[in-house]
Image 1 (cartoon, rainbow, N blue to C red):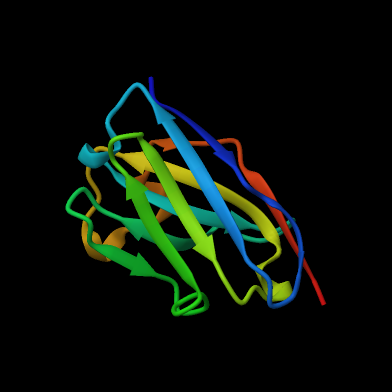
Image 2 (tube, rainbow, N blue to C red):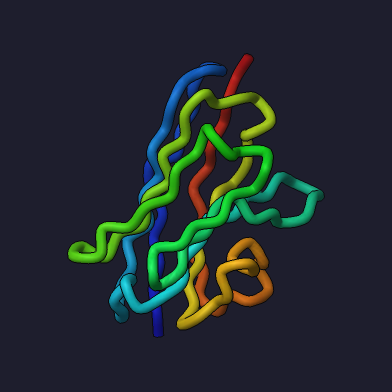
Length: 125
């Protein structure tokens, strides 16, 4: 069983930055595709950023140029650096992992088997 635990969420002013972390257990992240997803109440879960086992990345258009996904393979940690935050970025953020996901499908949540419990990000205007 793969366990994922997110941290780093909080409340920030628009234009500020946050760095989310996802610590993985029971597997080596370098061998998995991983991604960040977000969801607001009553809305669908949307892919934000993903990274495959080879380090290829994919970003939602809404965050491209502002967010950066990365992995520390030695420590089994996934990061999401979020800069220039906007109120529309407010959501519960989840990390996810799977053994393999095609690069062009990294933002499809239905392809991931393992999920964390989420961390809340709130951006005020």
